[in-house]
Length: 555
Image 1 (cartoon, rainbow, N blue to C red):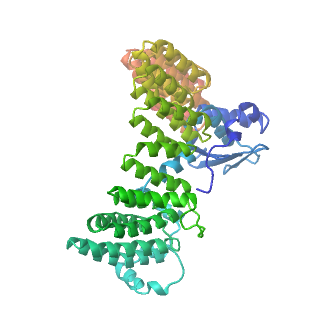
Image 2: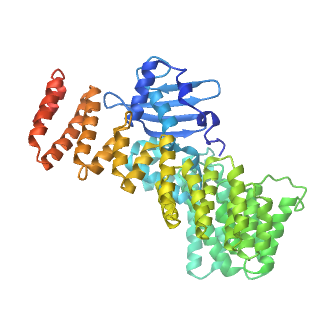
Image 3: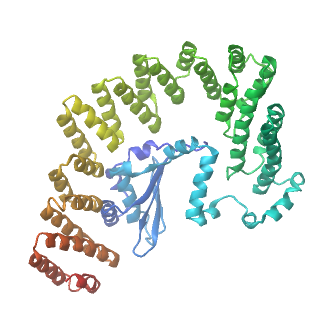
């Protein structure tokens, strides 16, 4: 993609000391309090930008965006605050500095979505539209066609080639026209006439690819249709092309399409090429096409831009299918600066039990890779490699390095399993918990301690000043049957906190926690203690009429 979504160094190096130089002290304090209350929701980060949202005094949510460059920090928010940095912006900034692991990273979302097929992306989008029809307004779709009947649509299709303006309408018409030939091809296949079916499907694919850049396929329907055609075409070729020269001619055509393809069909075309190579001469022919393009010897007078990595991946797939491991490894080594090629190389080396080499390349990638996601992926793969080969101490070390960057509870469990097997869990556990504590990753720390059954440590953490309400609530609910008195203390802490906010919606939350306290006192058969507590609470807050109203049913 054109835009770089990797988080910038400016954001990664942001500190609380830098925040002290901007805005007003009271808004910084309020923002810090919002962080402790875990108010920021739906936070996401990319490049120099972070966004999030936070509930306002009423039902409205405030949307915040903060941009951080070397020179300055700028923020926007739809709240009424007239200054440059509102408390919501500071809440987002403090959340980033203290709890980066709660931010969704757009670079990861881009990577994940790039691996989805057009069909999967369409299914995801359709599911989103079903849940929230307003999403349609954000899509580049001409709304008038959403209400069209089948008869009206059929009438439009008749004039397809007379329409010159690109758009969704043309896409629908193109698919409808191509689908008629698709149906004819399927009929040929049902009659076992795969030769004619292949010809028809080839024409459909070529026409679809020719027109693809001219129409709007934001719905992904055309790409999904063409993917299906490519799959059917591959099956037909396997049944019809027996003569080597015929096959070479077809393979050359597909290869030319493959190297020039820019619309996301490369993987399907690579599969189409490699699945139709069944003997050495066919593999050799495609290999020569690839090498010729790479060296410039193949049609040297023609200047064609192409993706070098795409051709390397095709060559590697050819070598893999023909079991030419030496060639695979030699080529992958030359292109190992690409982390995707590096992954393929390491997988191949591991499959050949050449572990030391795989380890070397993984370590090199971890040291040299600048992208956060690929770097962490390599670190995790290295740990898994060690684990698969029963090198428990090295696996544990690699998992710990990964955990330091991304405190994942699943990895915590892996570290626990490995260190338990090496009788080092107690020492390792303490190091992990200290590391989490120093990094201020209290959410993960409390989750880990709860998994460990270390209730006392959880209580100490929850009772600390400035702890998030979410974590206090989590601990209180976890211990209310085994440590009821301590649970009451935590619930009372939450009650006092929400009462101090002086808003009706917060009073409602406080009363919900009072119900928890009442239930625990009832289990302890301490009804009088409860009555004294609630009466004292009402007396202390007598001037807060709305709160007293909320509490009254509990008395």
